[in-house]
Length: 184
Image (cartoon, rainbow, N blue to C red; front, side, top):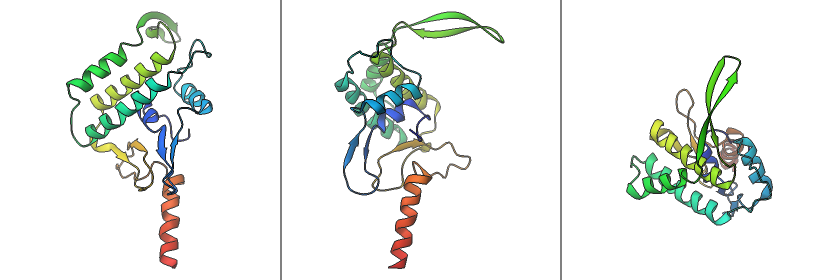
């Protein structure tokens, strides 16, 4: 969770990761209820009915759709007709309404979903991908430089030189590996 918060779609994609320490083991966080609860809380998407069944197959399909879509975009390819239709379908899963709300600076319009459920999560992940593709720079979507790590991140640093998903995790791991290799 310390690495969350850039883009919801990337957090969803990174829910399947390879062990960055080099074991080759894949870690799927989606089936873990603690991960899902933290994810929903981080993105303020807690469902109206916490006992609602988790549509695991649909979430895995979403993740399996988003990763290649974003990786193709990072290489300069635009979403094709099928990608656009899939995104359109996912966005349509969660109808919304507008409401006038009073705030300290006056009134504003707030978009609210009719129902807060897993369809909203899927729709918001699609909206996040659309926002990233529509307003981001594809050269700034990167994969962690640790060859054992599968994380994607958006490099919004000032000079766009970020190399790792986390300097504390993969960055330190690779620095220690290089140090030990030099000492041999």
